[in-house]
Length: 466
Length: 169
Image (cartoon, rainbow over all chains, first blue to last red; front, side, top):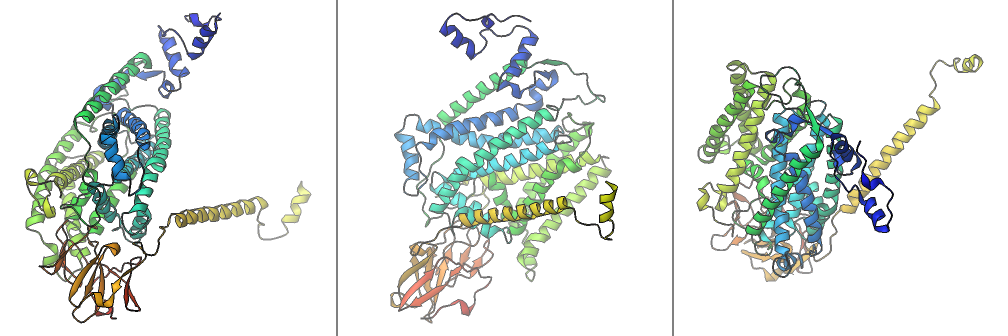
């Protein structure tokens, strides 16, 4: 082992101070590098050596790391934003105006915060997809999968609570619509909505509640869960090892030192994304409309973009089915995934197998064809309540179309099973992919194809809400 | 040791060991404490309401201020006070029963039309157009000494309109 010269007794005070800070020379051999990882608070989150294959950019796409980085960016920008914001009806909006116009770099700070938050929703979902498609949710990583989903929900909650804080028209009505969707949950929905809002409507108490959730409850929970999440990654044996399609046996693993191989990649990746976010934030301002006016609802009134899929579903189903049953079933399915989608052989293979990839492609094509067709059909041709006027809306416009949907899924599954001889995990993959793409299309429809009165129209005809 | 054991085997029922009893007692008390903590937190978070603020009792005006057949906007109560031709009052909550937008009164069309997703309602708040699935909510009205007071703390959701909902002076 090479002796570090700074280990020698220092003669001067400055020398001793310098020595306390850390090694003066970077290690030059593997043992030194491994030692450095273990001796460092931040670095020791990593193992001293990592399997070389997991370094592949096209395996993880750096999504987990990016999520963590975005979170840190949000916390740091958030802390600074706190200094210039008061969550009161009289002051909130003015504070945002001051931030944009009277504060040095206030606008940039706000933009970075806004865009990082929106990017985080996307990246967290992509991370979930990557983990699912490579089988990283399976044993022994089941608990970590669940922790991850909880964190995703908290991220959405943080986005939603933060959305209200500027107290402009966009904020006020998006939160009104969002919390109204919540109150459709039977029995619990109304009291929950009232508790969250701090009253019967979005008002002063809501602003304070949301602020408290946004700056303390959610960040603290996320940080605690994130620590658990990282710890579990290590405890569960690190990342899943990518396997090539034809590989059957466990591949012989080459391990390389974390320093420099992993750390170098992470550093470059982080700096690159920081640059992208900064440049984007300098060029694209975060939206801000007129001050919130409870008397004037915009037309159309839309929830934040990540809830638009839900709002679109509400246009097609009775609220109990569209806002409670379907999301509830999907969420339950996600949480329980590691317990029915089992199997070890395909872990590390994207889409499980050759046929799995074909099934995924099939699911995408099917969803891209069927979903818009069904949206159009439901908008212009189907009218369940008129065809079944004697039945309550919950059944005619809720359970009946749901039954048809489930019949459709069953038929698709039969095709996949019999025509393509798909295995159970491949069928799960098919259904998951179909639902994912369908939801993405619903979300895009809600965002870009719904205009005044929530009528279907071409995106260029969707004016800004007034 | 054997002699001590003999005493306990004279009973036919297995006696509850002290350890188990204490464990159960801890569990029960711990459960109670958790429930109490939850209850206290919920109680703490309940919204505070003040008279005169929305959520409390709001005075709209004198009975005679509202001619029969009129619909008057009461912004502080977030509602429209509809006085029907027969003199009865309905305090119609302006919150659309679909997704919560504020529904304005259209005097010309004599109906409430929601700007967000085009639900519409008549002078009594009865729903005429989807996507709203039920009539507009109403607030209980109290008429004290000729003053119309609206209790905005308890909106009443109704599946259908009913003559019993109308309040007379």
